[in-house]
Image (cartoon, rainbow over all chains, first blue to last red; front, side, top):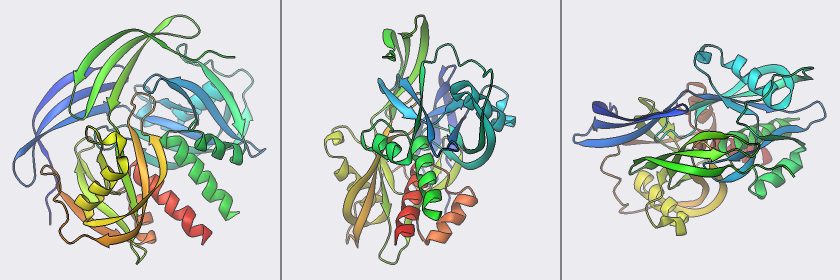
Length: 183
Length: 183
């Protein structure tokens, strides 16, 4: 049996933020020797594949500072402190805040976004029975969002143009494509 | 026309690493007011969906310190300095180092992994005409890898068991599923 574990010899805390923490670990390699591991710790997030009864995908356009561009993404949000116990409630909150819809949710995937250096895990839910909420919760103060509803073909065009360019939205789109092929 | 851009008022450099840099930006919000953005800058990476002529997917098992677990992933690697100009060469290098194969590569997707706070972009290639290399380049010294070749159904089982749990590998698997459905 091959040994894989990298035991932590020393951890250096670099940054404690609101979104993530950063550490550098000195680790003992399983085959001998040592290495450094730069790591990001993140509380996790949720996102929702929401297709309306009219077969339109709900997308949110927003500015992403990390890439200095806008992008079109499925509704998503970080888990707040304490929400780990009930990520579905967090997903419903994000869906309502960002789109004004509520729904029933089913977990499709639970995946690490950048497993090489970051422990952020995103839960992707599929929404069914979408219903407009009369007085939806307001969105976060520091968010500027524009809502879109696009057809399957329009979504593919947004991929080609690079406007859809993030892993969670592509995963959701491919899931939608697989479902449509099965029909 | 809605305004989206968040102009940087001040940038505070937190960390300059080998894998990523960390900054905190004070930004002017498009609707007025200010906010802080915690950001990770990463040089990008490449990964390869490699299916053998026997219809087996090549996977690499390795330890991921960020999650303190092993995972099964498609072959992948970071772009080294200067490789931005030729990411396909980087993908071929990683494929050879990690699996001993070379191939022809076609770009499938180019996606941000964690667009909310990180600019890491991964290029996902599809390998065709896989050929074993006689004297493959050795793998990186600080990597411990185990190679697997799995059928489509075995790959789905690895998803269910949580052994496949990262975005790039799930995206590759979904692409493979879509291709198989089209046959």
